[in-house]
Length: 211
Image (cartoon, rainbow, N blue to C red; front, top):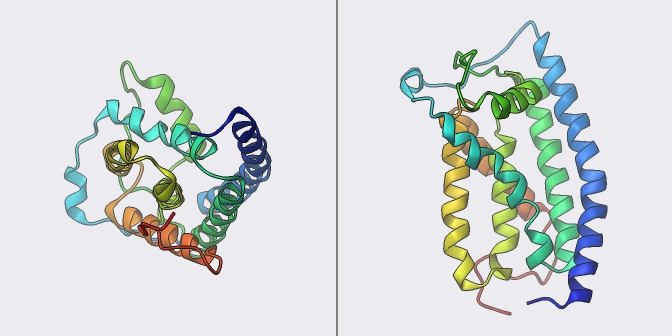
């Protein structure tokens, strides 16, 4: 467990990293989403059978829990790893933004206008996301990057928790009608590439048993 001083250093590094990552994300995601709204040509990567995927309102909770997941590195990772997290997130945003720009893909689901009991949360999510920027799923990419970078630092007791948490986040993007199956795979690919692209010489493999 980190000392109070180490936690303070981690928190400061995390705040600095978040301080430039969040505006960068807003710029890339916001611009490509706005552009896709007026695109003359759009694409669809959804399978016909996905129209039968049920809408489960309560899955908005694991969906929004990503915001908590990406905050937890401050409690488990060293400042250098947190800096790498920022670089990996930036790399994922650049890759995803390029796909959003070249192949705008609106969501294939017809979202409900009213979600009793959950309207407040869905108004926030759908108000920010709109219906574009689906492939790849940035939600999945960010979750994948976080898990990959956290894995070696997590105590054994926490690893099972994070596997379940990660699985729920992935499932939530489908059952909240935010993304399609192809978007999930795209997000996983982007997350893995971003993780590998920011790897520095001497870093052990993600599942290495080395200290």
